[in-house]
Image 1: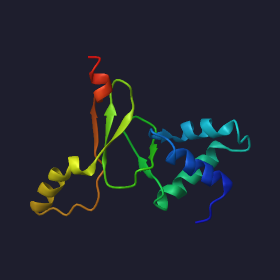
Image 2 (image 1 turned 180 degrees about the vertical axis):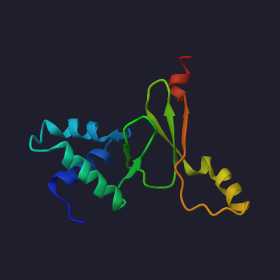
Image 3 (image 1 turned 90 degrees about the vertical axis):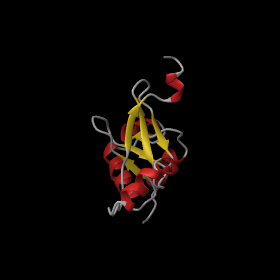
Image 4 (image 1 turned 30 degrees about the vertical axis):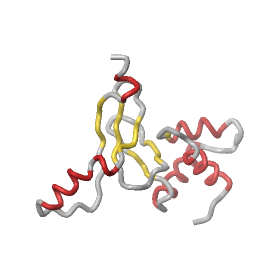
Length: 125
């Protein structure tokens, strides 16, 4: 896969972010310094970066897709208060995975999204 200047900027924006960005977040971040950048270009590059394993697309019902720099197997927590999305490390859900596997199921992949309240927001409740 070739890396154009725009594709590299999009990837670096995701890699340098501490949050799970949407295509609109990325577009709005880059547009001021790259006036020729279009939202369509952002979407096309995100698709290519996802397909080639550089980033992971996180689909959450009733929300725009987000993009994650962490491509390792893991789940996500969606905070109902601040709307942030947090990674859940694989080891936190390993027992469920092993139970299902031991029970005779073949798990090829998974997307686990938990809804709740993050620890920062839970301190204010």
